[in-house]
Length: 633
Image (cartoon, rainbow, N blue to C red; front, side, top):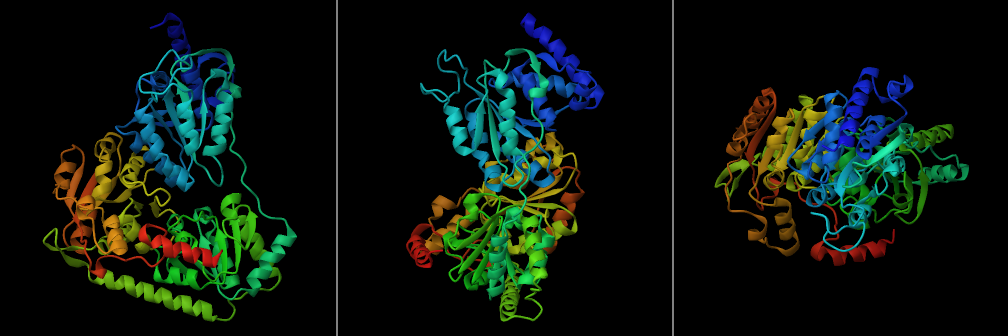
């Protein structure tokens, strides 16, 4: 070891112990237990910067591009200040950090090496970015002296290539100069802790700068404090216009996006005062209870009969914190009769997505409170008398519930691949989500057929019972997210709904879940294919490209799971009764478990929920685009 570095290491160990003894970095500075001006390396400054933000958990796949940061974390973990969780996949690390923040609010940072590992984490970062969840990423990067190609850098004679990549995906900063660390953190905090639309921040660490000594570095340059949340409108003219539109509307539908998921109380009152019905995004499941008569549930290309009826027939649209993904607004054809849009959002782009819009940039709950107050002030309560709109929507909700019940009743069908009767996905997901709510388990959904059916089945009573990555539909998210159950300070039990394809993309959870004490179950619905794509191909082209979307390889997933010591595995059986029994056994196991359930795939309509909306994909595009231009919204 370099002699000068050995001195720095001793000072580092002393400083870490002093911070722990003082009860944290702020108290250590206040009590002068540590010096405000210190000789430290950039990597130690990074760790201190995270401590000032209460980021104490680091999910890592270390490599030669992140060894110095790893050494600092070793010292600080031995002092009791941080926890480091080494995993076998950078994608898994990203999903776990995302799930931890999304479900519990607890922050974590993902650390990778340079090159392929960073690229994998970069790909997975589309999940927090798409869903508005703040996650830190620390990537090793090429050296700043440009002495020649660095091992695993992008092999091209051009500067800052990883900065270009990461800035395209989110916000990023290269620590080209160690002393810029304060500015880097401030920019990162503004992204990761944004109160309305958080995302990923990429901190790039050139390998030759990580060990750079900063003499008399002022620790108070490391920033604290998240950016403030938006208020609401005080513009009387805008408020008057909103009230006028709502007063004149005959059929109002409210699109509830992720930005409104904590505004349930205000939303319920608004629906009553305006005689409106709500259609919800998957990320807002539970913002009002499923059984609320004004909740038309999911809407879009994988929506419900009731939700899509409300969208198709409404004359007025109120948008609450939604971002208009293609499936949710049927590629901009979801509201063919709407004449007025009221859009309450935190960002100007989604706020002005539609024409004919009266927009408010503000916090959803506060803004709804102001509008509700004004409606009551003017004695407007359109629900005082039952309306034809409310009656028609309620009838569609009954039809939707009957449609679902028919599929739950016929819980098994003969499957040509399994060559026997097996359970349908609707039957499995319904039984398992009911079980999860009863047992206070958090349901996590993977991409694909499982997720699409899950949209239409879940019947949450409150926010936080279900989490599904609808933003990116990243295969393997839910199983990787189970790692958060072992990392979280406030423990919870997770039930990950996944398909055979999604699980196969991220099976490392079987090992890392045991290593880090995950408490949850992988419910693996196996239809031996990419069911969502097979169905889409058949719907669009009348045939399935079978050898490209199914597999002929039979996998014993129970044996695979049991091969990892510490994992319990069960067969889910061929009936709901057997499935519930397996779930109970899995819950009784103090650790990670897997349940394998063969499920039906085929043309029988009782085997799934189908699609009720429009979508700009494949050979549907011409008709959808033509309708969009005709509507002109």
